[in-house]
Image (cartoon, rainbow over all chains, first blue to last red):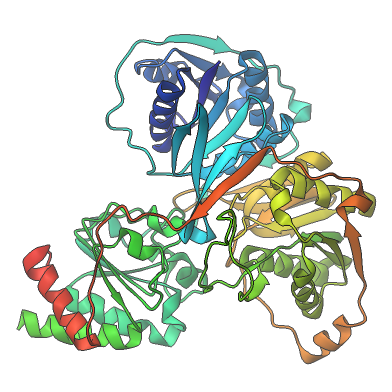
Length: 325
Length: 256
């Protein structure tokens, strides 16, 4: 039995989450006493497979087919289904990317299984694997166990495992050509595109003040804007603010926006849904201002003020101005 | 177009949650519930498609009796009728089971399009829609921002990571999971609320659908996450807290 980790690449570039998931697979494999193999799919992935083979794992499957050059759920599901039926791994581990969210539930369903999606950690208890997932947007955690025989499926949240201490090794590479038919692929994707040029590079900012749902309406945005000005920082926002058009999309931080790691990140009225946290949790110092003491943002904050932002933020602006003289 | 909207009732967004006595779920007694936000956007997308192209919008829910309140809200907003698979104990079911119930309930409906939110705000597995598509043998696409009807097909705008998008063409019938925030949600009008009272809600049970509960994945414990970081909560009056924070940022963290 073994652990199979599915690595993700787009146009020959690794998804950064691939190696975090590999790190998770190696840890789990060691604790369960199972070997770890990896698979990468695409049109031509020999070079990437060779890169993956330089880590301490058993084997890398280069799953190649012209119909895998462009992602479709139908082709990817069929290709991985064939590989998994052949290998019969105990566990299939995937990075919880948008692409995995698109095809992995379908893949697990082919085996009558449920993907334990977006796991943030694991432990081995009584020889069995327990995965930790977040519920209610991070307010609670849940321990999840597989109740069915192999193969089981799980996906790993961005940033949950560290890829920087992966041991080097020399794995074998096997090229696999799945049996795919163009007629069985029902969706027709076009070229990926971006909406607009990004005018603001938030990743270069030293200080970011970010605003969320707690601001209630567009007319209140200046309350937080004044804090950004007082700190000499950039103004950013969580997704709902940009969806409402209260701030431009280019100021959005999170999985669908920019990833930032400033010296100081001040989250105002942001509860801290994981989609936001993945975009900013690398910040050096995090301050959270929120009326809900149980908001997940306080889990990752260095300093917190529990209170009404409409009272706290103006007071903070005054204190900063006083301090700066 | 006949459109089915999968809709889940979840605890209201700002709920204070407590785990229940068994530690496997949450205490529901004093909670308020609402339509799962991404599902509300799926409903809105369906209503807009019907306004443009005609047809019918059917709401589909699995949940206890309390979920009827969310169904009535959806009907008041403009859905034509509803199917409520009544199940008091959702803990007996996993995603595969729930999607199986939903798929079975709509087999005879022959919809052109099935929409759901991209994930639930409670369990957040983010896959009921995709699993339902697979069980029904339908093509699907996830994290959809816009739907355009073509002849016998649709063209959707799908969100990718880091600000990228793609268009995808999908033949009908198909299933889509809809992203939150893609448009403005409508409110129910007084007339809508009045009309909703006469709209059909078909009630079904798992037994009637011939589906038995089973778990291939189970939640063994629900708990408040342990802090991984030492957070200093600055107390006192608002003024004191603000002054203390500035002091910490200047002399402690040295970021000011």
